[in-house]
Length: 309
Image (tube, rainbow, N blue to C red; front, side, top):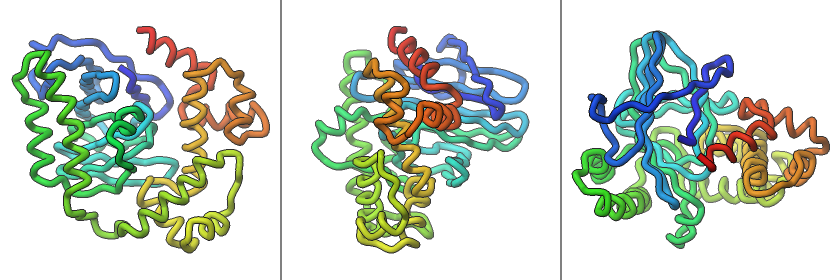
């Protein structure tokens, strides 16, 4: 599986494949299932892959208090909490998702603190850029909000569908699109303190400016002026919408571009660093390792190995 889990000290968690017949919990029909089982935490990860999207279900069960770092697939993903709660931390910015809530996010690496004797059930769909382009509609990350009944029912149907492989593929292809349709058409019930639509539009304009100019170092004042808002709304909006401040969003954008270049090109580490705004290879390597726990070279080797497997 592409998803990776790490303990707080940076030690990677390695999973073992388990037999579906022996697993008593929720099963994602047709998916692969792996598990890590220790005296402190049990993590069960399931995934069903398609060239354009992936479906996942994670169950985190703790016996003691545990802090984990989770590295998900790059790109947009729908993340819904079926039971328990998920405390998300990205570069010091915190967000909580409770049972019955979901969000759309493009942040692939985050930390979570799990309380003792707790469990959290998470359902996810990962959308490729190609699929989003096929839809022809701009779909962007959204802050946490309550799931409408139709969305909850669809997720339950996905996890308990009885279809054979041929029908299942067709069913999943339609279902992942349907989840986005429900998101786009439901009356928005953002949680208290969340942004209104006009604010969200402005924040995405600022984020687009950052993404298109990775080598620039805009000040808060410059970015606020260019996107048509004030400093306070810009800073507050980035934290609420992306779970991180403006500076960390710039780092995130740079790291995502770096990962893409490391995977799809043979450019040197130094060349990639310059392309995403770092003056030296050392500065780029330090930022990458601080974000992902691996050097760019180590990540390139790992991701290419995963693709071959």
